[in-house]
Image 1 (cartoon, one colour):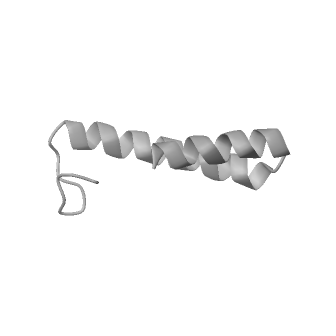
Image 2 (image 1 turned 180 degrees about the vertical axis):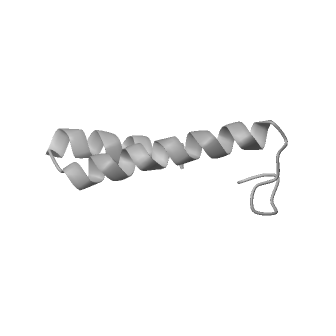
Length: 51
């Protein structure tokens, strides 16, 4: 999710498409939060791993 967010962020910045930039930022933030919570061993949505 973080990688997809970074790709959308870069494409959005290069192409000047603000919706891609916004989606990229949202995906990076959500992916980072899920990665941090998953690394602490906390179950999210009944799952301990998101891969």
